Image (cartoon, rainbow, N blue to C red; front, side, top):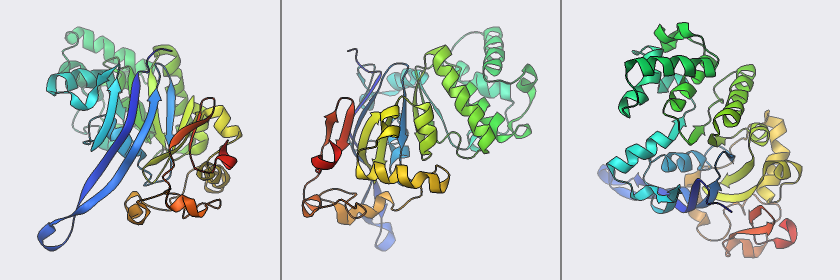
Amino acid sequence: MSEPLLRVEHLTTRYAVRGGVFGAPGGTVRGAEDVSFTVGRGEIVGLVGESGSGKSTVGRTIARLERATSGEVRFDGEDVLAFGPRALKRYRRRVQAVFQDPASSLDPTMRVGEIIAEPLVVHGIGDRRDRRERVASLLAEVGLGPDAIRRYPRQFSGGQRQRIGIARALAVGPDLIIADEPVSALDVSVQAQVINLLHALRETAGLALLFISHDLPTVEYLCDRVVVMYLGRVMEIAPAADFQRAPLHPYSRMLARDAPRFGGRLEARAEVGADATLATGCVFRAQCPDAIPDCSRIPPALEAVRPDRLVACIRKDLVS
């Protein structure tokens, strides 16, 4: 098998917490802990979990917007966490991000044409004429007309602004887009349009996509594989169709059971920073209906229990 485009191995990202007198250091909070997964070329992988599960921390660390504490991120075989400024600039041409709130990620003082052309200018791609043609082509690709070039972000709806953000991400021809909750701020009908656009872009441009979301049905629909996180740790990795049919980890089964009650969106039960008392054993044990005494002392390894199915649970009798 060929090497995956993105390989994340034992990635840990912790945040320093200020506390005590005059903001003295007060310890660390685990944003993500020992996270491992891959994204193949042209593959869509869904990173799913409740609010506070650490999934956005993982995405931001991969994008080098957060500093990793330990572990590895390899892109096309190269060590991303070791990149200096020049290598990081090349990396950011190949890996782009689309964020949750398009209004906050688009400069309100710039026209749409300038916003989309900006990455081309930064990376020295094409001359002025080439950039104009590229911008017009990208707008058409995301379903917006040429009249959008001279307008400002405030003159568009939320769904249209997200399309502009996607066009900007596509401008430099990336191999991977990290989409962090790209549709959660949009109306349901507009969400469907953006999801279908992302799916079509994979087919036409061969893009790989790391799709971060707390909307389980959307992840199951869009993605080839699903990575489930809870309190900073990966609970299960599975092909999306297999996961939808039969989730294995007790937490995954809880998500599948509860998601319909909340319109598909996962309701937070705990925050990542609340796991100070769960330093040993399984972080899900306090919520798990199948926990046994060993769950409090044995940390579960993420292991293959079936072909293409990885689960972090010591109850092999339940997840095999």
